[in-house]
Length: 149
Image 1: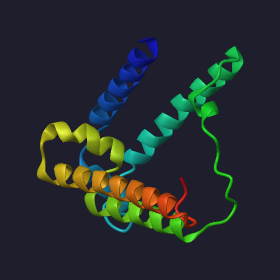
Image 2: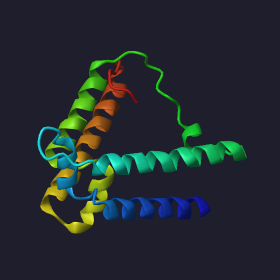
Image 3: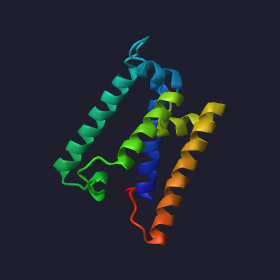
Image 4: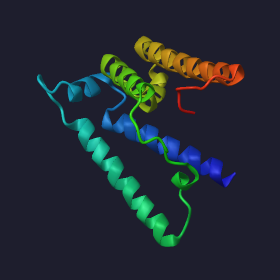
């Protein structure tokens, strides 16, 4: 129960932070990506703030000798850049640039009911389901998958 309450509190804090910083507004993201026009550094400031908070938390956890959430995750072992990595990164970047949404802010912005947000989240969920479906199909067929699990 404590873990659920902690996760809920962190999610609420994240959502409030995104709303207060204006990162749920796609125009702010597009302005950050528009380096040849009217560039806005707001997103860089939000990212630096998030990095500072997370780095502080990691140091505190290390000092206390507590396991962090990251310690249960295994780092990628692949040392090469393959088509799946480049394709996934390109698809993420294209979606981010076209819509102005990253997955986290898009989920927070669902509360606005804006059609663009609904379309983006629906496309994101469809993409996640498609990826899971291809992984399941590949495992069942016994063929080697080029998509990382």
